Amino acid sequence: MGTITFLLVLSFLVFFHELGHFLAARFFGVKVHVFSIGFGKQIYSKYWAGTTWQIALIPLGGYVKMKGQDDSKPTLNESGDDSYNTKKPWQRIVILFAGPFANFLLAAIIYFAIALMGAKTLAPTIGNISPNSVAFEAGLKENDKILKINETEIKAWDEIGKVITTTQGALQFYIQRDNQLLIKIINPQISDSQNMFNERIKKRMIGIAPKGEVVTLELGFYDSLAYAYDKTIFASTMIFQGVQKLITGIIPSSEVGGVISIGKIISDASESSFIALLTITALISVNLGVLNLLPIPALDGGHIMFNLYEMIVRRKPSDQVFMFLTIFGWLILGSLMLLGIYNDINRIFLNN
Image (tube, rainbow, N blue to C red):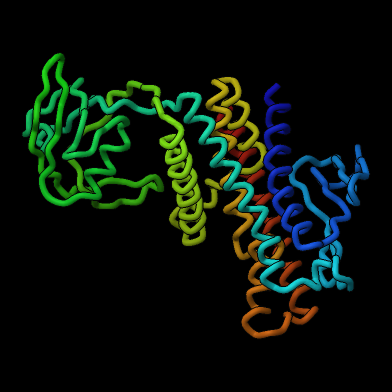
């Protein structure tokens, strides 16, 4: 069942990505020969509205084959008003960007649905308090619930850190303890900490940790839109930063995961709850959007770079350069896929 869920989720995300390319291409009058979910041998197809819609044997991706654009033939050049390579560079950029944008949009829609269904988050209830911390000195205790900081109402634990790190000076904490309302003035201190990439950083802290209680957020329509926007932006930023840390060596290459890791994550989420599955699907959708925007010649981001070059210098790269960079891009992608699979297999043996 986990494998089926993985294939369905991946196919859905690929379909949405390629649909972005397809709709943008058709908007500019570009003919689309093939819309494929998967690669390799065709196992199902239907010709409709001038396009062959197909499902292929290897379900680990997909593509739209446009007139005048074919990654398997990088120097392909076809004439006609309905050809991709006769369109203006900015139009090609829109077509290329539409795929990743569709993934970001899909993630936002999923996060919006999660918010309406009842997004779960850590409650703003204090668990551990560090000895000699400013929170300890102010008299905060375990099970205290933070209701408000200054004029900002607190509904979730992560909102506490946002307020502390984005404000200056002392803060007024409104605390619920049993049936009492207490007000504590606390001046956060700059302390050593670690970010999500295990980098040592300094930030304003008061020395508290969550109790671990989970609450369901009750969000209206507009609050759900804000929730979806914030989650999509946060996920996109996190993945962009993760790629940067990987390139600079802060994150070791052993952390790169492949299709086996993705499959296991989706399978585990599907067994946990439907909302957990939706959350992972949204995160993977953002991941696909970000990774496809990387300036690697075989990806959308690489093609966007070629078109930006053409807009700036008023001419296309030579066929030799284009061919070389495209093949080089495929080698990079192939190497990353092999690295991911190698790491996945290593983890399986280590866990056993």
